[in-house]
Structure formats: structure tokens, C-alpha cells
Image (cartoon, rainbow, N blue to C red):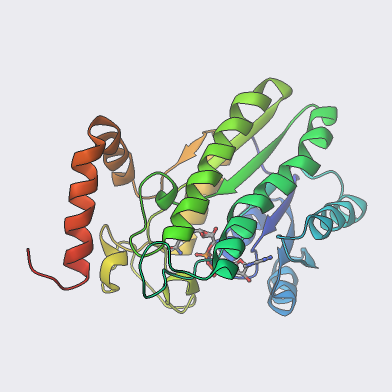
Length: 270
Ligand SMILES: NC(=O)c1ccc[n+]([C@@H]2O[C@H](COP(=O)([O-])OP(=O)(O)OC[C@H]3O[C@@H](n4cnc5c(N)ncnc54)[C@H](O)[C@@H]3O)[C@@H](O)[C@H]2O)c1
């Protein structure tokens, strides 16, 4: 899809990957709505790119529907909807099941249900208009595993499954689905100041930097190319494809390897 003169809504557009994508879409000639819980920062980003700022909580279906209606009233029909907002909290001290319910719920609501709510509102509209593009930002954790992040990993696996279902069901309606699965990206989510100047592939953040940390700008360019080329799976870290194949070929061996990796980043010796 050519993004020039298209209308795009990006959730989580105030920071990190979403902010970089808003800027990249604007440079390519799209009209962009910057939607975020952090409405002050959304206003700043929208002001910078001549876009529309929307304050919303993506875990509330009514907020998402109201945002879509506002954007369609003010900018026109949405051609590209990017479900990018995401949260992660880490496991509790007792391991994989020990995070409090509120964190599990927030992961499932923001990382999964917000994608469902967006698609529920957008699919009939796009179908009626003959097509559109839904971009769902999951994570490599949705194909593999983020060590120490059981709720995040489970929610991202669910997001991957949902994006597959959407793509399989709605391609014939003219709706293209992009699924984005990066490893580490230099944003607040992994404790990096999002304005840090960083060389792509930088290291230095413990277990997160296994294949290098990418900048938000690089990841945004990958997403843009994926939209333009109508690809399903967008892997800014190409290594993820190999890991995913290894996991599929021998799941038990992959679990053993991940256990060794967990011990290593925890500072334990073999
Ligand atoms: N940073 C990474 O290493 C990494 C790796 C893989 C995938 N991702 C995914 O990329 C996406 C973007 O994350 P990021 O790294 O830019 O992090 P970030 O924390 O910089 O940005 C996340 C944005 O989502 C917004 N947000 C959070 N909850 C919200 C809600 N309920 N309603 C509306 N907005 C909300 C935040 O305000 C923020 O602007 C997430 O889905 C994340 O899981 C990030």
C-alpha cells in the first residue's frame, strides 16, 4: 500500500516505536492521528507533524471507538490502523506465575484485547470501503519467549495468534494485516531514554541486547516498508526467523537452550 495521502491512526504514538512511526508516516505523506494514554506527549508529537492528537486508553473499547469516529470525522476514513501501544511489568519474585493479577490483566487488555477492539471497529469499515491495512505490533516474545516476562510473553503469543486469524480471514476483504515482532528496541519499555542517540545493534542492556538493540527509527522504517510491500511478518531483527524455525523443529531442545540463556543472564554458571 502506498501511504501517501492515506489516513493513519497509531496507538502508543506518543513515545518510542509509535512516535517514530508517526514521524515516518508523516514524512511519506500520510495524515497521522497520534493516539496515546499520555495525551500531553501525543499533542507534542501531533503538533510536530501536523497531525491529530487523541487521548485514549486502548484497553477500553469505547475509547477506541470514539477515537476512530473522531479521526474519521476530522481527517477522513482510516486506511492504516496501527495497534502499537503495549505494556510489560516483569515476573513477580516467585517466578513465571507470580506477577499480580492486575499486571496479567493489563498485559492481556493492552497487548491483546486492544487489537481485538481495533479490528472489531475497523474490519467492517474497511470491508465496506474495499480494503485497508491493520498493523499489529506484537514482539519476538510472541514467537519465542521473553525471559522473566511470563504475562508479556503470553499476551504477545495471543496477539500473534489473533493477527494470524485476522490475516487469514480478511485478506479476501481487501484487508492486509502486518504483524511486527522485534527483539530489543531502545525505548522506555526496556529502560532506555527514547531520545538516546544509539547506533543500531548497540549492546549494554543485559539480557535484552542478545542480538543488539535497534533504534525506534530503524524499526519504524521496517514497519513502513512492510506496509508498502504488504508483508505479513515484519522482523526488524532477522535472526528471529532462525530462532523460530529452530523452536519449531525441536521444541524440547529450544526450551533447554532458553533455560541455559536464563541462567546466563541471571549470572549463574553452567
Ligand atoms: N522496546 C522493545 O524492546 C520492544 C520489543 C518488542 C516489541 N515491543 C512492542 O512495541 C510496542 C511499542 O512499545 P515501545 O517499545 O515503543 O514502548 P514505549 O513504552 O516507549 O511506548 C508504549 C506507548 O504505549 C502507550 N500506552 C501504554 N498503555 C496504553 C494504553 N492503555 N492506552 C493507550 N496508550 C498506551 C504509552 O503511553 C507509550 O506511549 C509495544 O507493543 C511493545 O510491546 C517493544
